[in-house]
Length: 432
Ligand code: PA5
Image (tube, rainbow, N blue to C red; front, top):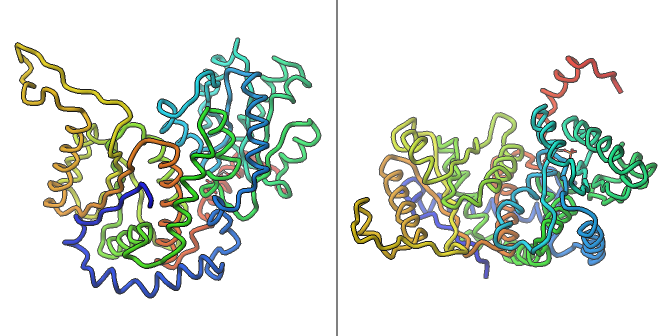
């Protein structure tokens, strides 16, 4: 059984059981389309069974690289943007304080921004550190990552010499198409190859995600075992009473049709910060096309209850919420006794922050429902690599199904080319 629980009780005023039931036949067909690769974007379905089909040789080469890197550096820079970096960043920030081994390098990120100050400060922070870098770019042609890679390659060559640098540079890319692959071969960089049929935002279970996650000291076997459990559970039946990812997709699809065009993913645990970013990308790029698609937005509760909470409670009624919760924090913090009780918190003495946070969640869920905002809830049993592997897979399945239900190809992103065309024209990029 999975450790992720989905609850749609607070959406039932808006969606009847028979409306959910009416989607079952379509969901069955679309599930078959995914499994038999007969639906839209079927050449990009490699992610679907990655957890069960990842060869042992990939774990072996990640372990070998990890062992070498650990002895060589105390700073590891992941260079990438969008899907090529967010999965790793989300996993590392979600897990670092609970599942990280001692003596692992500090992980830095680059290439996800063109901010000059960010890169200048990063290069300054790396002075005096022992550094290794990992470019992650499927196409090998993304401007932001290419710029950061050039900056960091030069930095490394100045610091270690050309040969020394080449032993500290790792390139993760698609082997055939990528220009960076030729450069890696010429310079003798260690390379990992990304599968052609797995898009960036679905690539957290490839070497794009697994290598940096392993370098950060997280047990990638445990992470992949969680994903495998979810893969098995969410593949075996498309029945909406058994498949929680599809039930989540069905709810989202119906809410969107009823004018709830914004999904606010609200997390009650601060460790979810980059999981929310990863999820926004997955939804935005997969579903937002052909004039359709839920707009994914995120909030950190309870902080944002003091700001966005007003808009949620009483603003335009075009949104639904999905609460993202952890049943049990890794550490227990309790309200201590204070004999004077001058702060008036005596009524909470002995209570844990988890207990209080849960009441804040329940209070918001009912208040927002009363205010006309249907809400869903996804709860993880604990903050662990195993649970996170399940969660990523759950979202991938759910978003693929929501995209199929609305009739789009969830695996392409033609829209992101438009700004690039204008930007490259303004930059006078020579045509290729
Ligand atoms: O999900 C996607 O496909 C995108 O977000 C890409 O991952 C992102 O644009 C980076 O592309 P690349 O890995 O080719 O550098």
